[in-house]
Amino acid sequence: MKFKGQVAVVTGAGRNIGEDVSKLLAENGAAIAVVDIDKARGEKVAADIVASGGQAKWFGCDVSSEEAIISCVAEIKAHFGRIDMLVNNAAISDNKDMFSLTSAEWNRVLAITLTAPFLLTREVAKVMIEGKTGGRIVNVSSTSGYFGRNRATAYTAAKGGLVNLTKSQAIQLADHKIRVNAVVPNKIGSPVGKDEFDPTRPVVNLAGRPGVPRDLANAALFLLSEESSFIIGAALFVDGGCTTMMPGNS
Ligand SMILES: NC(=O)c1ccc[n+]([C@@H]2O[C@H](COP(=O)([O-])OP(=O)(O)OC[C@H]3O[C@@H](n4cnc5c(N)ncnc54)[C@H](O)[C@@H]3O)[C@@H](O)[C@H]2O)c1
Image (cartoon, rainbow, N blue to C red; front, side, top):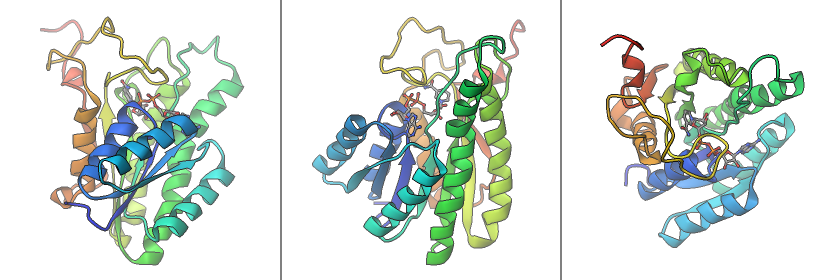
């Protein structure tokens, strides 16, 4: 039980990657604050964890709101008494090119995908610093943060920003023994914003298979554990090797 007595906050924990990260951390002894805007999904994940003998509670929060984030972190602290780990996982995509994307849509994608990890890290770090417990934080970026795309504009910008935000957070929190790292997934489980896994989704990588949520959860577990204590401000690719290949070159 790696994380016995510890508390993890996972955003977007109601489905797919966030759900599996929550369940793996719970299997390893952590109590989980299941943060999600969707009540039914969030309560189901928390109930699954409790039914398996773990500790979890759903906290309803729209992470696009600073006010909601501040009160959610306060509620989590009041309920569990401490916070040791944070996984900034919630995100939405625009799936649009620059001519069809409105500024309102741009702002919402940025708010959930980039500003929320800034605000949540700030609020959770205050709790960690006050408790003098140190901590570990993982930001979930995307291979979309490293490349341009035709059908995603705000999402690619937000995910690229999150990689560099991770480095600034890592520098600013290192003296408090809070380690911040990023994971960089590609095509894991269902696409962002969708419930269903699409077996026809094209996947080109060195693994020869699409990723499953457990691939990402295992990487997050490593970055949240003592085994990665010398890894700070890094971006760990969990992409089946797809970014290793230059298109058109064999
Ligand atoms: N699925 C992939 O193939 C893939 C690839 C690369 C990166 N990622 C990244 O991994 C992370 C998880 O992706 P996923 O596919 O599991 O996402 P998902 O869309 O399946 O789940 C996201 C969860 O976040 C919640 N959420 C959405 N908006 C919210 C808000 N405003 N406040 C609180 N909760 C909110 C949703 O209710 C949902 O439960 C994201 O950061 C995503 O960008 C995913």
